[in-house]
Image (tube, rainbow, N blue to C red; front, side):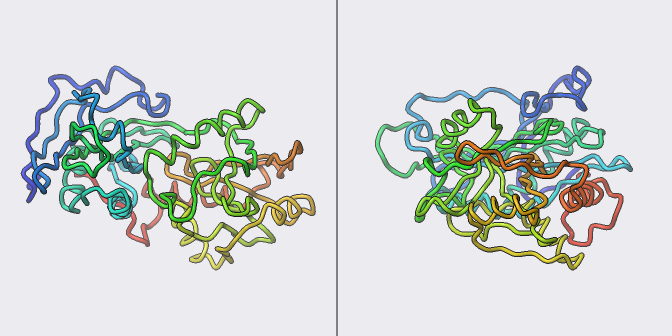
Length: 356
């Protein structure tokens, strides 16, 4: 039995649904585990900590989050290791980033012990949902929404924090083509681009649809001031390999500080691979693809881990990258992260937290 300083009540399902699905082949984000963790914020404090069967919520159409956008979330993963253990990757970093989002969105921070103990107890109950396949994972979605029933633009007085989980296979089943976007913008200076707020993703959907209508899977976002500098790749950070240097846009207030991004930079520096975090212009990248000095472009994020980018579209022209088989760095980092998560190599950065 897990002992906890947080008083969590647990209501278990009568029968687990884990045997009713093939957890190694489910589509991403459509099948959910047996349970969910829930906590309520009322009267200035977090309370009513509970793990209950996964279920729909009852809500008012006047709920503040629906009207005024106080909604934030995280994306993280648990993995089934080769020895059968289940581990969570960089959970403390996700907790810290969630609270950074909460502060920016005028929402209450979630205490570390509530986040961690709710997460671990939930995963302890549902760890059999973690896929055993090489590229499978248990995708975990912590989220917070404003729940006060009120029409009126104000900071909500009530919130709900929830953790749900879903077995997941690969996010992108194929390499992706991206279209440079410098008409619509994901974020602006002074805005919320550096946090995981629901509105950031809502505003991206229409431009992404326009790109998809042209045969691209995602967008390369650019800065809103000039439209000349690359910021992110769809819902991911983006990296380039130029003359054997790992190049990525520097973290400004308009970019999300990705945890996968940070992991790859740490691994590169451990291997004495040169890295650069700086402004990256459209002109530089497209010229460097043409002259052969940029040999790899890839998106990095929790859902996809590494998404190979095969071509970049700009002004009715596709700039094509070398084939995946020739990509030394992105494929190496993908394997290194997988080996750490699967327990095949030492966790030198203390990124893993074991589920009992």
